[in-house]
Amino acid sequence: MTFLYDIVNLQFVLIIYFVVVCYLRLDALRSSLILGHIIIIFLLNGVLFQANYMPDQFRYLQATQDFRQTLSLSDLAFTQSIPGAVFSLIPLPFINSVQSIAMINFILYLSIFVFMKKKNISNNAVDYFYLLYPSLMLYSSVALRETLVLLVMIISIYMIVIRNQHIVGIIFALPLILFKIQNFLIIVLVLFLFRLVSEKITFKKILFFSMFIVLFIIIKEYRISIWTLDQYFSLEKMEMYRNYMYYENTGSREIGYVPISGWISLPILSIKGIFSMLFEPLPWHVKNPLQLIQSLENIAIIILLFYLNTRKIYNKVIKQKIIFINIFLLVSMSLYGLMVFNYGAAARYRFGILTIYIVIYFCLIKYDKYFVSNYNLNNYKSKIAVLNRIN
Image (cartoon, rainbow, N blue to C red; front, side):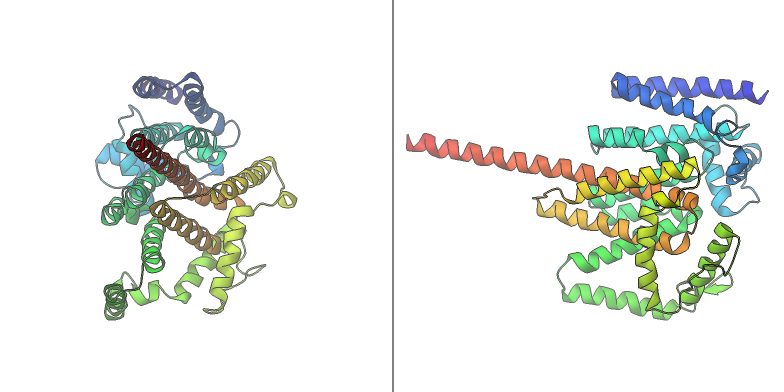
């Protein structure tokens, strides 16, 4: 019976697919790649791996069903019940299986593609990267919250980087507080660091940062649940979460674990975390076919990152925006590198960050080429006008 419900859902999704293909006037290759994404949904859970390989899927399914039935949040954690509530609002006819949530994620995935097209942050490179990136294809085809997180983050980063509307970008990122607060904190921290390093030192700037520090000192004893703000941002708190994540990923609290021993060891471990998030699993660490795919994917991503960062950028404004997304990448990879000790978990956490980084970087390169060509055209017209006056 569940299969019949999924057939009805599939028909609904296919209608959305054909509407989007016609609306965007997509060519045959792009249309086929998106259609292949729908097929992949039914080739993962229960075929390539058992659904309980990612047990979180069942919690998101339960949270979605609970909200549809009662219009109230599930008893599960907020990080699961809130995404479940959002999933339930997507007008898919039935929510009866993890494939149902996967089809909702496909609708969100397709919405991101439409957003990129309509906001002119898309070109051939962006389209084919977005449609062919293996980790994005995997995690947007299962019943997890990652596609929802990606949607919120890409809109937020678009507003901050492309539209230069920092406050609006933070407002768009606010939903992350409810279901992935670390990503919200990453955006705020990156914006803070960008403002710190990218602008000239002025009295107004010094006053702003001084007020920020004073405000934190004043409210550091403010209590959230059993912790004060000071405790939330302490090394002890970070180490507690890090040790818990290590135990969750490896099953041990001590074997091979390197603790944060102080403020000196923190940046060292953070730098190591960047490399582990971007490079691991290394080819000689591969133990199964999935890790082989992850390793090959990492090599391709590193080559792509090298390609992007060796492009010549001419426009000063674009250079500033590239500083922002590079800080975004480094901060994200260092923080997640500190906390993640499992290849699968690392792939799950980094694919969204890398998707946003590469999409926005390609967009900035496109804008820079536009500015250069427009500048050259104006120069050419000026020279022609001068020659005409001389003649």
